[in-house]
Length: 149
Image (cartoon, rainbow, N blue to C red):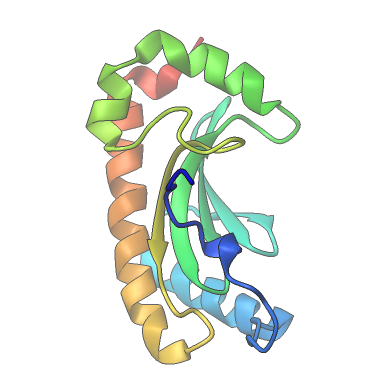
């Protein structure tokens, strides 16, 4: 049997507590306050976005057991379209971000980090990690001119 990298979604959900909508809102309210004056936009219940350019977004996300970032196009743009455009900057962009363009289907340059997000005592650690990742991704992508196509 081939071994593969552990994925947080491999954990059976039975008996595990999930974040409630109010908890998710408190997490994001805290993160947005932590990042002021950086403009962080609403992406979805589980994510917030930092715009790099009109066609490039850093998606900052939360799950029950992790936090992370990845690069995407604007709302409605297909993953394949974003991959095709960003591939022109490979391998340098992947090296600079420390992530793989196609490492996780649906998320360009995913950087995923375990965090027991159901425990609010872990949130400051999550804020610190997300801020470092978000700032590094923004700096690298902005140096490429926002990767305007």
